[in-house]
Length: 509
Image (cartoon, rainbow, N blue to C red):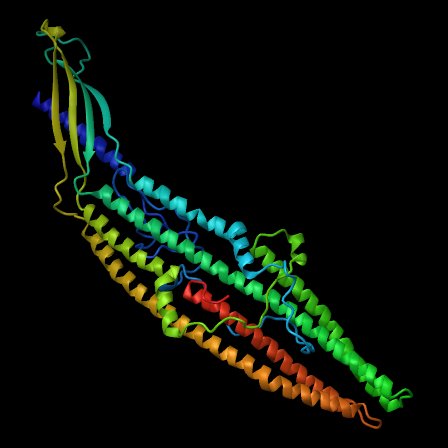
């Protein structure tokens, strides 16, 4: 009987070992990332296993294509180019009388564009699916190991047993149930890792929203800039038409030299008309880019009208120190790395829990011994046993050490990101102050002086015997200054919205 029980126990252990090998998740490349970005605090693509025993889980996440970026920059948005005006053409511009056109009262405001992004962005809709996937991984991590049930027959004769010709037996039939016991808390540790991973994914989605908002800011300002450029180009055309009319009224019978001067003005006017066509095309292109971000129908793009202005009408933002404090508390990419540190600590606890394998309890509720060949009553019995590993050689020391190093590495990454966030905020705050000073200086001093020189030159150019070349030179100088003024306006409007991006919350309209 004892030999039979030991034999059944050996079969049980062999079956469990084979099944355990089948249930252990194998490392998969890219298991430490999501569509949104690499999960901070994960131990790398060669780890990939949250579980490691029956009922374990792993993250089913696609790998990021292309070359690997430095770990402290993985999952972060690329730096936005600041201070550069959009490519809106290099043609004549003039500042018309009156304030900037804010668009129709029912035009699309920036707040409405943000709402449209939240409702219709396909990019955000796709990245949001990382969150239910992470919740599914939590469910997988919480699963318990299933028991094993099997039956066997032993000492089955090739011919009937008998006391004289074929002694042996009796034949025995067993029913066995084996259940693994997780005494080291592997399931609880897996659930903690999956929970922390899900929180990281949620923070990464929030950062994806922040990046998409920055893209909307850029596209919205591009449309405003293209619209303002078109307005300035039309004002320049009106100014040249006024010069041509004044020239024709003062010189009803022009000489050959005067006709040559008029031709120069006509050439200048035709160049402005070409620039006007370019400005209209740029405005349509900018509207299409904005419509694509908001997932609006393409045929609707040319009809989009904005309600907004490039000029600064907002109160001065808080000082840099206050903005840095706000950014360190609200930036979702920084929050993702801080949560990644918690994820790394949970990995340490999981590695420690994996030091010991499950204990397998064998319960044999039914054993039947067939004694009929010996004309004796058959017997029924039960058995109970347990199997456990003796952790002499491998107690998961390497993975525990690796997980601890990963905690230190993630903590350093958090420090790096905190410093980078503080630097971005200080740079954005300085950019706001510099661009605002540039716009104010141009509006208060440079533009009025250049306009005065241009108008004064125009008066002399319309007198008999005077040429118009001096006016053309003054006009071109003035138009170059208007282009610089337009670029400064765009730069300042971008700097306002850039503050929202680097702080991680809406501080400027």
